[in-house]
Amino acid sequence: MSIIAIILIALYITRYRKLPTTIWKPSVAWTRALIYFAFCNIISTITGNLEYMLNQPIATPEQLTNPKWITFCVSCFVFIFIAYWILWAKMTLTFDRKYYIITGFIFGVMWGASIGQLLLSFYHLWNMISIPRWAIYLVSFICMGTWQYFIQDYFWDIYVSPEHDTLRSIKIKTLFSHIPNVAICLLFLVMFENYLIFVIAQTFALIASSIFQKFPAPWAKGKFHAPMTKPGILGFPHGAGYNEKSNSE
Image (cartoon, rainbow, N blue to C red; front, side, top):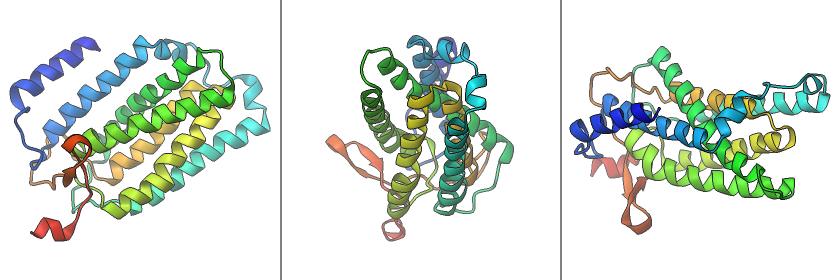
């Protein structure tokens, strides 16, 4: 994985690093995303999270006969379906981009599996410390939320995703999709410690995000709407969401 990351970084530096944020190209976005996915998997490996997850059963026989576990597990996926496959999809701009179902699905799987592992790594590290379960939930939630805010706002929604939001949709998705997703799935994780199910849940969510924003295939041609930005912390650009008035000025 480290070798792949080095190759991708070298490719990016030699070919794409001078591309301005006002121009969005699928091949560049895929390269940036793959570098980030490699980073997520490296962190998961270094923290011991990946090995622990792979050595666990998806669910224990006791859990599969436990009505409480079944109800909570099903509830997580029902919520994600409503929050991402319905609400998120409805609130997403596509600017008439073409559907690339197969590559969109593949991208979503890589996206969800990678970010799911990275978020899980926060929990895994806190879970190694002898503190109460409620404290593990609290500090894990804070770490996950903080990481996602900065990565999503200052990297992903500028350098990877094409424009797909407005200021209103960003607020709605944050309040009714992203925050509840982490809160609910993390609670399930703290209660039952099903590492792989947590990652599968995040993958299920991000497959929807990839498909319904019509994320282009790396070979897609044409002009794509680059994300709109505005100055954020320390003047760094962050995702502002599409503003038709500002775009016409």
